Length: 437
Image 1: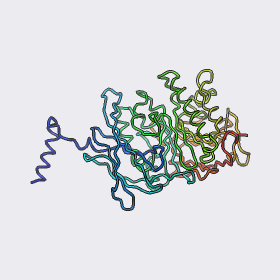
Image 2: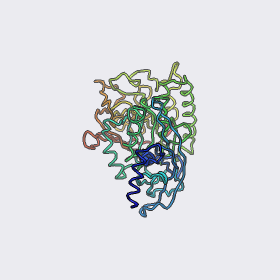
Image 3: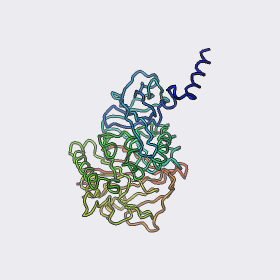
Image 4: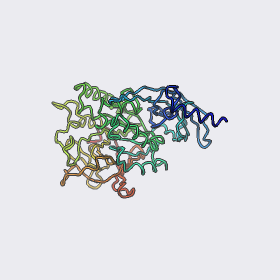
């Protein structure tokens, strides 16, 4: 009898909405993803519901696979800027006092509905370990060609962190943000397993980047537009190239980010800090240099990102060179391009035989071919002297920071069934601006 009563109650809930019955599908957590809050022994879990609910994560160590602990957070109401003014609740809970290297199982939600169970490995502490990354930009809901391979690699535990260097879904706001919801669901099998760290691209600009700012939970207090964090022997800086192109507030945001970048790099290059974490790696969406045939900013000699606004204000190439940034990661161009060490259009290889050993300038990598509806970008026939390798197919990058002197980078081709089509050792016996000479 109880089964029949339950069935009748369910039918009434759907047929008679004026009874104000609870709708389980609207309470179930979705779009689950992890991020590093920049605190040791911590991990942030973010998810979405479409009705208000508590924000709780239950978790516990493997192999027991029992939820022995719980943490509570909060939810923020987000209203999309489209005509439907769709509302959703973005939940954030930070798990603290995790054991470095320990695997944990978790689920998120509340008594009104739980997510499926996922697991993650807590990041190690300190500088003396070798973090592994998957790196890419420009992955959409349509034609996300690299995503199945990335999911398999995440499930195999092949990397500790994902760096998604701008452009999501194409676009998060499209169709009253339904495309954003579908995209966040599509990356959940990767992003719920490892920290999914991001920076904004041009496809996030609608409604003042509100969908991007609402959905992702990056460290710091700038709503994910720019931030930095330490991982192993590296200091990683994520920033927005888009402030140079969508001047909603004039130059105010450009100047604010530039000042923040200089303060952050000053702190990261204090002698004791640089000795502990010598690698400084930046990630921004639109590159300073590229050799694609599409009239983007990076194809111009006076690139805005590189040289700055009028009268060369707030240019990033000089700033990054000044503080001895080692590696600059970019996307936006739907291809892969590795540059020789370059500054001011001049190549500064370490030597003819070993160009990436003690180079005289930062190294640039463009990896924006994970897959989207805009397909691949062709190259100009004749590359400039600073272009080392160009690959026009779908894929993504791997990086491992082995130690304080050695870093490995490689490009994986999804078109060629996971074949590694490029790879370099970046070796630096000394870091900082003095290493350029």
